[in-house]
Length: 122
Image 1 (tube, helix red, strand yellow):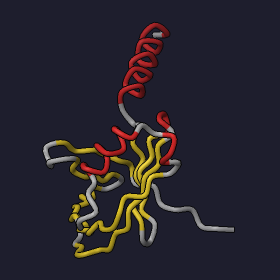
Image 2 (cartoon, rainbow, N blue to C red):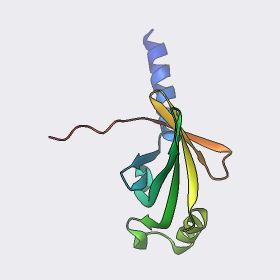
Image 3 (cartoon, helix red, strand yellow):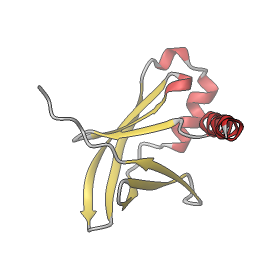
Image 4 (cartoon, rainbow, N blue to C red):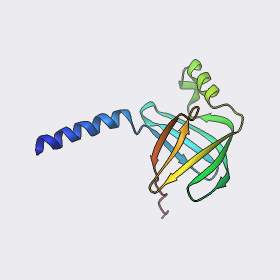
């Protein structure tokens, strides 16, 4: 039994090394994306366009704000700015019990997240 538990622990570590890198948080006015292993933080303004029981449509707009922009390669920053242009973009957030998912890029890829409710302040 202990060998099986070790095997499961190794599989979980391997999965964690591949997944669970992107963090997405929504404040009242901004969507904030983090890649902690890359020390990357980006934010963009948004407004809610529509919502129903299972989804929310938001419109992201304005220039992408990148924290510590000077420490990144200019070529990579240009690629990111092409992926996230300043033009408004509608994004759908699909809700499913304790999880939600969004489409990435051209919509063929999905990223799944656990919903974490903000804690009540002191």
